[in-house]
Image (cartoon, rainbow, N blue to C red):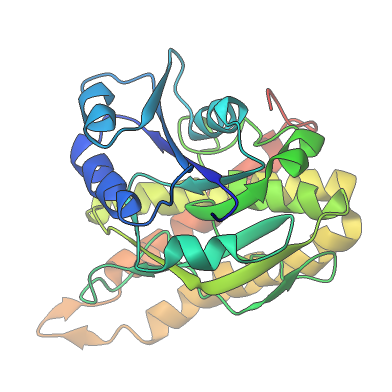
Length: 293
């Protein structure tokens, strides 16, 4: 029997998405694996019925926050390795075999988009197989499809509960975790064959808010690295600010010729500028030390 894993799924008020996520996971898990759903202060839709339908252990929290939920989940685990899958992510065939076959402190699977018609998918990765260590890459993946050795999580005290959805910064909790893991001497691997898809459920207004949150989170990450790991901060800064912000927005404007009497570039430009504004705000507001992890 393969080495058992625990899969932690943080959720809040999204029972339909959670049900699809758990259905996909149930087809993958092996004997001895555990499934833990952490319901993060639901306002409308408690997850107990959905978790029970798929045989998942339910952990309920009174305070919202995806990082807080993930930390509660891995601390409830009894296995050596813990996987994290977001409730709007559906793992594909062979996911468990591929992500659990890698011998590393942490493993990042790939996340594609569910609907090809979405022009600006969120929560996806361009995963390239390789090692994740002090030499890079700087943005190797996301926590929506991730496996970590429990001992490594204990060493760095898990996710920063001041970052991620449910907090003011609302993003970058996974990238901050990867920064602290490699700083502690841990080595990860990107495993694109451990594939999943992200459900693209956001409309244009929600997408703008998400870009703003991404910017705040990345600004927070840069701020922390500027104080704790200046070499890594210097390596990250050009790609985030110059290429990912101003240059990308300018390219969107240049390429946005009117089509059928409408400006095709409107939403993408606003999204990029929202991310840049969030980046600047997030940079100046982050506390120096991780919180609550």
